Image (cartoon, rainbow, N blue to C red; front, side):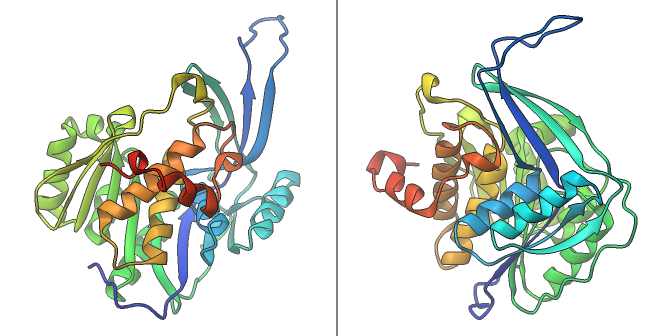
Length: 308
């Protein structure tokens, strides 16, 4: 269950799957034998928990990451990227690097993925001695479940990015303290967001159950209490360049807020995360769109950015 007493623990642990994101800004995507010129592009790390981990590291929280790394040229790039953020990387070998082609368009984005999850060995053993938070996205199903169980037993906060139903989602929820799921998962369950929260509370006793709803904001409830809403900030449409990774940054940012001060309310943690994701959508790229701590704090100095 939730534990705010681990003040001597200073690391956040993430388990996920690494992608290389290639984001291309273009008016059209050619087909057949046509050719076109793009306006711009970005190249960087992608993946749910992996981007959340980079967010955490960029915001100056000691970060541990267990993630897929392939023995190819792009794998070398991945390792250097993680090293540049000071992330303590525990690599799990995979046959080849996974890729995502991201195409932002009119406030939305299309994604074409080439995923390789052919792991060539067991996951590494990460020590939990100084870990205060574990964040999962369901990738590496067996490893995610093992660490969720261990962390729950040791009173380490467990967090889940429930972007959609995975093979281990229902089992993982038994050990999750903060479950922040997307509308897609609600649709897969054939439930409304409110019903999904009540379901997590009833079936799994989830201490903090939340649903993110994009432009409609997010709703959440704590310890079986009433459902509360946090509105989305109104960002002018002409300033929204790329929404890719905004959700992952949101997850990483509320982990950061909890790591910085676990005595704050979850409303405060989610408002901090909303600020980070609101800034991110005004930039192109996934990794490149993560704001700095100074930028988030300056953004939150405006009263309208703190309203719920």
